[in-house]
Image (cartoon, rainbow, N blue to C red; front, side, top):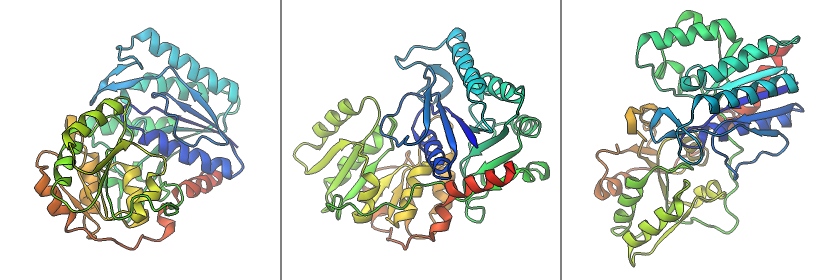
Length: 374
């Protein structure tokens, strides 16, 4: 099969990272993959075996997801968006995919609905129509109004063959964050969690006994890092802060000044972060999908500080759902203090990782799609 995955990340890098994991699974299954990315370029992901197509990139204006900017921070106009649509539609015509997967849309990315719909319409107009599927994570941003859910379901029913939910239904059903009607339920296919293979512990033992602090690959987490520096001053363990985003260098300089002579490692995000987790004493992190998968896979105890700026609730729902095993605790961003962070760290405990099949969602997705295509 020839598979096309259309994804646009607007703030963090999680959507693109998960799409790339899916793409690698299709490649491993012997299929040809075109990954079409509409967000800002991310160079430290594994794109091996696939064709990566970069659209003229857009990003959100902070947590305002209805205002799109280009790489230079300039508000994009309709001409810019029309060019993106043309490139994406031309790719459908040129590659003639057997499978078209839209990541998140129509459950999200409605600001780009004209682009996604143009691609879908182009696909449906081809002599050999591809199977059109939607790919979503475990937790969605709940619809702010009932009509949003109704419109989403209408698009799914009209244009799609199925919705691939990258979750364990027993642990994180879609109903946790989205209203599921009887009609929508018929179109849902749970794949299990999508994650890379469990990390091999770092061969150099990096992270041994440390508290690892991360806010993911995007440029968020300023307050979290500041509180972490203050907490590290009161703790006997060594703390390591991993700072992401395009302004990581200036943020690291700020944090180093805040730390003074306190022995804290402050550095950019690292590609070997997952390998550090098995050695770590604990982690402090937001609760994005990929970070949660990493912590579950390694059993590393962690305190979640869910990202909730701009009314976002996805990470809070996920964190609260996971904070029942003893491996995790949750502190809201609004209530975060050094003392609360240290108290929470003292309550969490290392766990035995769940069975591997919970995290085999990428390979299970390939199998599900192969069966649908027959």
